[in-house]
Image (cartoon, rainbow, N blue to C red; front, top):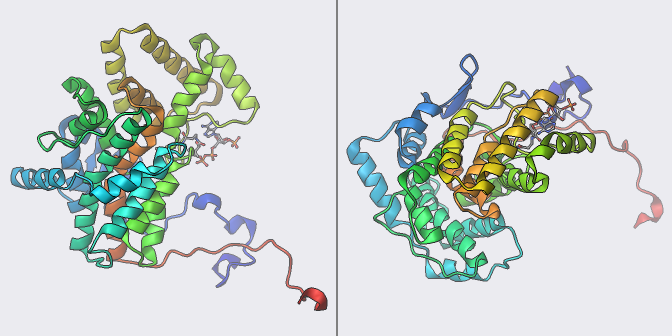
Length: 387
Ligand code: ACO
């Protein structure tokens, strides 16, 4: 096969894997999808069991250290995360100057870049230093997301509360109150489900950057850029925009016909890995239905009816199933978050998976550098007049 030629320049069409679809590029011990059961596992534990029994902090510990924490380890982990939450005054001042016309993902990307510039251990890429940086990011990202949502609402930021857990504290910093435990739990479930998904586009981006022996903050900054796009994490926001565009549940099927005829991608549907349904969806769908049931508000009922109608229409018309972003987008709206905060919330969770992969990449690094089949103009002479 010509693909094994050192440059790949003349690979045959059959050797090209566009989008790296189906290509296995490395090993990982962090997560996998077990095909027989269609279940995603983190370090061997099915994610639905983790969502049923664990806190997000326990799952973060599991992803980073390979094991669920003991009681003492969890206490220490929580204390460290809570102590690291407050932003430096300089970061807060910088972020207050970022134009509100930009997307909150741009604010987050800028924040991570600045966290790197502020970190005196920048340049130390030992596993211990990277673990400390990962925890620092986990602790500080929610503070940035919450402050940015408040700024866009014309409100002053609320300082983190070290007496509150990761999920509770985020509500506190966004709204000044913590909702009932059932709502916090639905949010925490979404964080657990979003935490890790093997070599997805943003994680792979982080691994590509790490593979050049660049630093953790650079890798995370790049990963945020990759997650922002609507074919990846940006889909949870796009789902809500789409539901707003459709409006009337009665219109779902007709809207879908028009959208498919216009060759639009239906946001929150389809997946590169799951072709028979995303294993995370039933858990998130159930959590979202609990939010709908406790609301009783006619507007919520309309949205939930529309959400179901579109899912059925898509299954009947294309046989394509929802991905996690479909129920999560609606859930975040029902929890009161503004749409542009949805993908930043995804970052607050996926930072755990990204940084676990950065550590793993460094553990057995190989520069990631694929080849391309050249289809441009053949070699030719520069005209004499060109200089
Ligand atoms: N809407 C309409 N058609 C779709 C969709 C969709 N959401 N998803 C897949 N298809 C169609 C494709 O057009 C293609 O049809 P064709 O064979 O007639 O060309 C067929 O189904 C197979 O799809 P692929 O493009 O091969 O799927 P791929 O693995 O490349 O894409 C992706 C996966 C990008 C997620 C795609 O399903 C999509 O665009 N979905 C919408 C965006 C989205 O929800 N992204 C979130 C992903 S999950 C996450 O990041 C947490």
